[in-house]
Image (cartoon, rainbow, N blue to C red; front, side, top):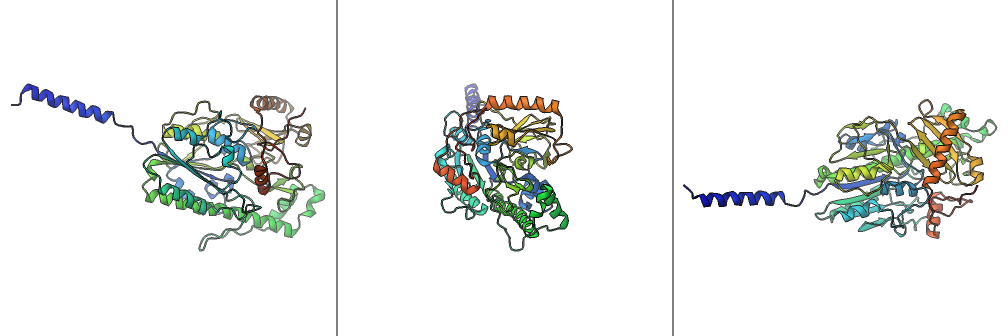
Amino acid sequence: MPRLGSLALRFALCALLVGLACSRAPAKRPNLVLVVIDTLRADRMALYGHDQPNTPALEAWAKGGTVWDTCYAPAPWTVPSMSMLMSGRQVMRRVGFSDADRVPLAEHLAKHGYRCGAVVANALLRAQNGWNRGFESYVQDDGTRQKTFDDGWPGAEVVAKGLQWLDGRGEQPFFLYLHLLDPHHPYKPYAQPGGPEFKPKRTIERRERFRSILPEARRAQLSDDAYLGIEQRIAAYDSEIFEADQALAQLFAYLDKANLSEDTLVVVTSDHGECLWEREAPKTQRGRGLSHFPQLFSGHGEVVYEELLRVPLLMRGPGVPAGARAKQHASLLDIVPTVLSLLDVPTLGRSDGRVLDPRAADVPPERVAYFTHTCALTENGRWKLHLGKGRREAKELFPPELYDLVSDPHERAPIADPARISAMQARLEQWMVEWDDKAAPLNEQDRAAMRALGYLGQDERGDGMGAEPDED
């Protein structure tokens, strides 16, 4: 029989081993991959019900995660939307990360042990403006090789560069940010051998639908050739979505092969949507000569209609339900707080977004979107008021427009409701005053990049949002 002292020693040794096991370093946090597909509106994706087969890889991959049916960008172009996405903070004109008071996601994750790398095809997100903060590697197509960005990096090249960085990732958790420029203007037809064909939908009914957007006296301006050009470009836009989808197929395959899928949170979204000749061009956009048939609006910026703001949002990884379609209304502002919660990383402090719960019933929150001359307030997911802002001329060019998104989701027929317009206008104007901030001036490199992407015309603006100084 062992002696009592020997038994006590064994118990003490067991207790010590248990204590050591409990005091080991916490389990490694999940990795993060954030994919932003520039200029991608949700309703042009097969995943969201579009009739073109342009998202097969995303559809297959999304079965293991959650798709948000409704997600909004807070602005209709890259710089302000990405400023808000990467910080979870609402900004109005002071965009980018040159100032120390707003901490971007990568810098925060780096402080908590993450290695951070980025591959960015959009030349507006320049390191000189703080977009590289927190990234040990920030690889960017700076747009110096081309005048109109039509020779920029395709999605496959962006993904390949990102995977090259992942090959040397080491043992730390990582954050990889990929920003694809497909399907940004100019739309270039993409064809994959043996893949789907994206042909123009040329019909008399569709031609007349486009013509009906114009005032009656100008409808004859949309000739058959001009109409065909519109359809060709829309088909090319759809094909570029497929190009981005196929690039992401390579990312998903890499994560699977490297046994990273189970330990990696992947988020796929866009910075804003796109208008595809579906409404008359805003008066501030006419005559710039940057698009085919400029009497109808194509591109983004300037106005804040639904097609410019509705973007996809998909998540897959630890803590994300598989095979779910979330009804909860989401915003790009919600991505940072949600991601940090899923990664079990402390919050960034103040946040204007919320932690999303795909299983929760939702009452759509109040939502504001804005650009240079216009802004909009949406209440309860239904009532949406558009206003001109800033200069008196802008307010005259963009008088109040109220829409019921339930009965008119495409915002075609403004309604008269003076009492509701007055109340919402007061709230929106109050919001704009509360959130206004001093804009940083653009340097010439920024202005050149914006011209190449079509954001600056004859009435060039000089601050981070392209906004002119406010005047009464």
